[in-house]
Amino acid sequence: MFQTYLFVMLAGALGTGARMGLSNFFAVKYPVFPLGTMIVNITGCLVIGFLYAVTGPNSSFAVPPLARQTAMIGFCGGYTTFSSFSLQTLTLLNDGEWLYAGLNIVLSVVLCLIGTWLGLTLGNLAAAR
Image (cartoon, rainbow, N blue to C red; front, side, top):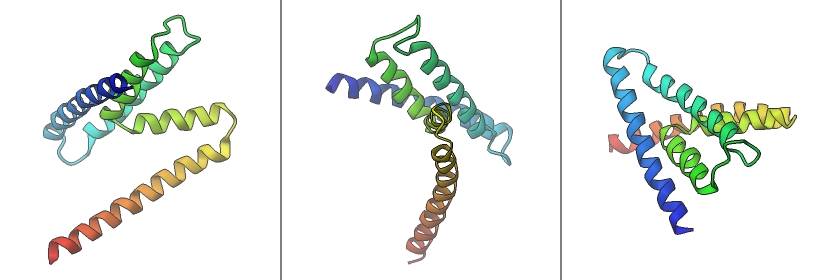
């Protein structure tokens, strides 16, 4: 169990470093639009989708669970959580759970925007004191 957490955390650190490097690279070139974040989210979704399909238990490239968790939860999770959101939403859609997929999309976007607004508001109030 400890080994799993250690590998996932180390891969998460690598994913976080990759996200920072790519985001900063594009932030310098395109300071007005968050292109780096968009590219990170898109490539993270591409990678997690590919890994999910290629490394599953029924795949011809099946890998040990530790390797799969390290790559998908660790690296992809550190790189972008949007990849997990996208994979979970598509899995719901593939399972015919249209209502839950729609709720996941709407609630995630709306509640995350509200949470960010609330955090900014509280932070600004705290900073003003």
